[in-house]
Image (cartoon, rainbow, N blue to C red; front, side):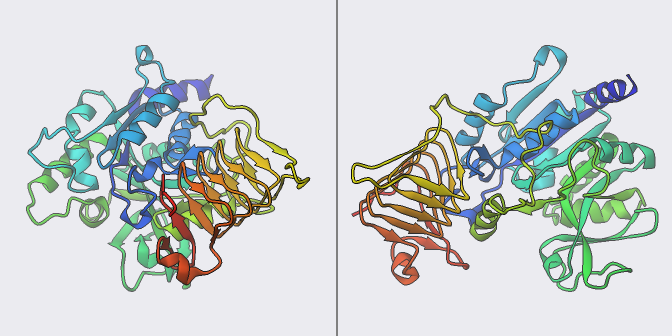
Length: 415
């Protein structure tokens, strides 16, 4: 009963804001026609499903999703897959595009995006605001972090994790005392501060924040009045709050409530990071546990027949080895190895797909060969086509990542 009362209290006292308006340029061409949080992931999901599932299982039922660039696909996904809360109980997942309520600008930064929607926070009667990114892959129970925030009476609590010091240059880096109070915060430092007990590691911000609402309103209003501000949480908001000694760190991967302890978190903001995170799901023991039965990752799924393999007219067996195969996939005499196949993919006779990610509706023609590829939706690969073997030739017509992943954009037409 006590746990149930605490869950009700969290739902009533807390509003969640998911930042989902970034352009995602580094993930092009996958983001040429969709917002980064709407990019498909893992055979059936969208990236934002992981953050939304965390909210669902953590008891956070008042959710604003701040959208901006190329948001149609994202808004359609929220409508189709996440219209599950009951507004009569004060629950909702609401997409909020720029409203121009504070001027004639689109969202100018992470802090400005929330500042432009302060009226939505103020009328919610919430005491706490959970600020999340909609473009990270991880599982986390936010309830223990919110409990930590209340117990410390913090103005701001920042989720953090240990990372190798060299990698910390891409993050906001924190220095903390024995009470987990943040003493310093530097956004993307050239020389990251190391941990006292581990000179090779740094404490990095995950972009997961819990604010006490009064303090959030105060700092956002001050930031909006500063013409020199970039209106970014990491660069402008957090450093100012540290002086008041009200900022605390919360270690990710410790006691995380009901979620199993895989402690996996990835920013899939580049093609190589996105590709590797999908490939992580194919490891013998995947570092990200998507199979925890009481922590399912919810998404929208169309009504499709089961996947199947079938022999071709020439007698070749359709096979797949160590792959994720979604509903509606048909492997007709071809093969998929160490690959992720989204719904309605078809692989024809003697075609070979290796170490690749095929989005919904991709058709691979007879005798084609794909290796180290990401193929976006509704692409027909002609018979006999070879991609991913000769990177120089591939680069003449496709994007090829730093690590050699070939990306074929959606609806691409061959020859």
